[in-house]
Length: 93
Image (cartoon, rainbow, N blue to C red; front, side, top):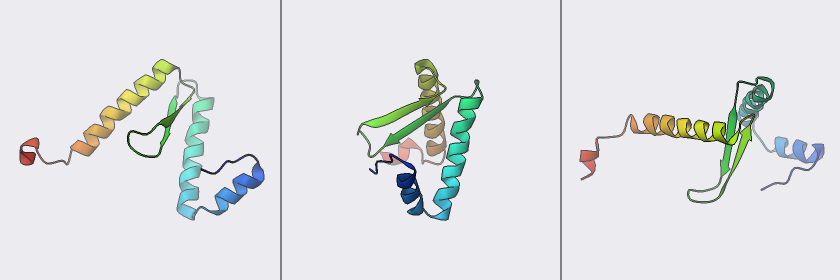
């Protein structure tokens, strides 16, 4: 993991990214900023390496309860969208 301590470090890391990554980062930063300026908008950023490994959970304009509700809703949404195209469980027996 790269430790970004100052503007020069940030410039270096940004120089390692391609155009698509820059565009995605711009979108991400824009969404995070919106959470700070709109009191009704809450964010939750999850950062992890592998399954069952510790992760960072960063709440943005969210209480612990807001963060838990966001995570629960995200879990249901992701499970639904992933399982939507999955074959019936009977096919696995």
